Amino acid sequence: MKKRPVCVVRFVPALIVLCALVYSVFSATTSEIEALNELYEATNGANWIINTNWTLGDPCLNGWYGVVCSDSSVTQLNLGFNQLVGTISNSISNLVNLNQLDLSGNQLSGSIPDSITNLTNMDLLDLQRNQLTGTIPQAIGNLQRLTSLALNINQLSGTIPDSIGNCKLLEGLYLSANQLSGTIPPSIGQLLSIQFLYLNINQLSGTIP
Picture 1 (cartoon, one colour):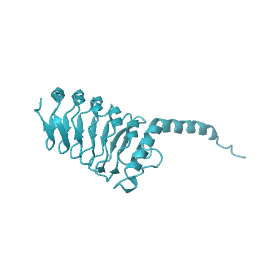
Picture 2 (cartoon, rainbow, N blue to C red; picture 1 turned 180 degrees about the vertical axis):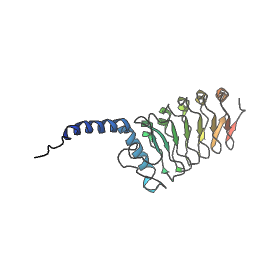
Picture 3 (tube, rainbow, N blue to C red; picture 1 turned 135 degrees about the horizontal axis):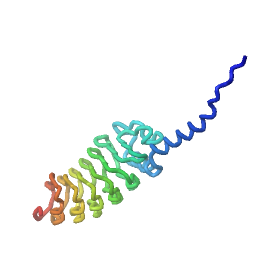
Picture 4 (spheres, rainbow, N blue to C red; picture 1 turned 90 degrees about the vertical axis):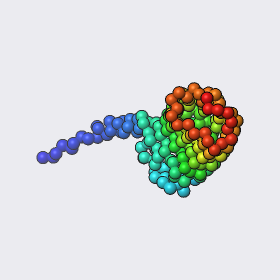
């Protein structure tokens, strides 16, 4: 007597659909992947101290080092003290749901891209201990969810933007050891949540409001 074959084929399409749904739910967007790949290339990613899984498929599904995802989007990028050498690419602004960006303690040069001020979900921006030049973006006040802004120990020049007063949730503002000049903006007095304020080792004048 012949045994009837077990019919498992009928479940295959459902499994394929399920896998597709899982991939779509947990994978990063195309623009996010492109932005991360551009940062990798712009900062000599092949020579980072740790670059586990970078450029391999999807950063959320494949666990790229330093990348944290939530709900199919990149929400944190933590690459501090990882020997990044180069510049911060403008496409960083494609990480639209980023709430933490830590590129501290590297050898980043060039200016802070203005596009970074489009990342309005950020609560932490840490670029300290690099070799960044140019000015603090004038629209830094767009980042109204920031609780910590660390740009200290760079080579930033120019003035502190008056728009900094819009970052009313700031608890820590670290701008020391740069080449900042001009008058301390009165708008700093609007930072009612501030606990840590470091403006020393610059060429600033005036009083703290």
